[in-house]
Amino acid sequence: MQTGFNLVFDAKTALGECPLWSAAEQVLYFVDIKRCSIHRFDPATSDLKTLELSEEVGCIGLAEGGGFVAGLRSGIWLVDADGRPFRKLADNPEDQEISRFNDGMVDPMGRFIAGTVDESREKGIAALYRYDRNGLAKLAGGLLTSNGVAFSPDGSRLYHADTLRYTLYTYDYAPKTGTASNRQVFARFGSDTDKGRPDGGAVDLEGCYWTALFEGGRVQRYNPNGALLAEYPVPVKCPTMVSFGGADMRTLFCTSASVGRSDAELEAFPLSGGLYAMRTDVAGLQKPLFNPEA
Image (cartoon, rainbow, N blue to C red; front, side, top):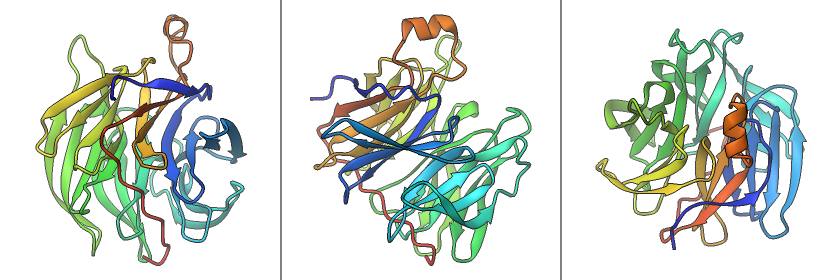
């Protein structure tokens, strides 16, 4: 069944990210960071609805009672179903001139785990944070681009990438407390001839981790021990993040980017920025809902 990704919608995103399946609505949400928007895509009808925000939105999670939790440049917000931020939960504690929230997801207990990006690409000011009813807490620091957040099926392992350092890590994670410890290198990427690096990821029911390789043109699947099991081509140079969805959770969606790419690359890959999907033999995990009182 698994051969590669096909275009499902020519979304023309500048920086598509954070695909997120809503089981209640049977639709896929995803963001365009650079165009400050959240998209709602209905696979049954191919209808696309766009919610416009006033600042960049790096990641979202579905919230209990409707709407979203969102990591914006200024901080973490509650956003209503029409895309209007209405309650700021926490400030971005970094220099917002060169920092914004990037990748993130809701943990098994309803907290929001989200990281930032160091837009200077050199200072290492980015970090990974946990937001819960006690406020914002740093889980890891000294990063360039926080990415790849995902959890094992039992919630005891946290996956996390520092994209510009070409490294994917794992942590021991305690769902009851939201603490992360014992960081280990899970996989390293990149070479003189291959600049593919780990961007957004997802975990399936077998506990295997899937990662989109930015500038690598493919998605890889690893077993829980860090062995590469398979890789699947995406018809763009810069896939950005994967996430499972569909009625049976066996459709793997993949966003992509067009911003900052050369004219030659966009000529070779004219559907950069599109939304892609692939049917898989194994189902993925449904994402938990955000609970601000978690």
